Amino acid sequence: MKHLRILRYVDEVARTGSIRKAADQLNVTASAVNRRIMDLEEELGTPLFERRARGVRLTSAGEIFVHYLRSQHGEVERMKSQIEDLKGTRFLAARDRRISPPPSAGGFHGESGRSRARHGGTRRLRG
Image (tube, rainbow, N blue to C red):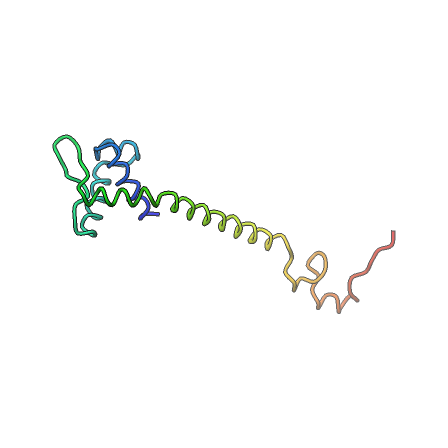
C-alpha cells in the first residue's frame, strides 16, 4: 500500500531525525524517502521537516501530521487485519468451490443429467 508506506517513511524520519538513518531502517534509499516526503509536502502545501546540515527537524505542521498518523496507527493496523481476514475468507471460499462439484455436475464422478438419462441414473450397489 503505497500511501501507507509514505506514512511509515514520515514516522521513521521523525523518529530518527535523519532521512539517511530512516532509509537504512526502512531498507530503501535516502533519495526515495526524501522524494516521497517532498511529494507529500507539495500535496499538503507546507514542509513537514526543516532540513538541516545534520539531519531534519519537524516543523509545526510536521508535528501535527506525525501526531495524527501515530494516533491513527492502531486503526490502520486493525483495518489491514480485517482486510487480511477477508482475504482468508475469500481464499477458503474459492478453495471450497474448487473442491465441491458444481450443481450441474450431477452425481459422483461428474455424471451429468444427460448421462443419467442415457444410462438410467445412478445405481446403488448392494454389498
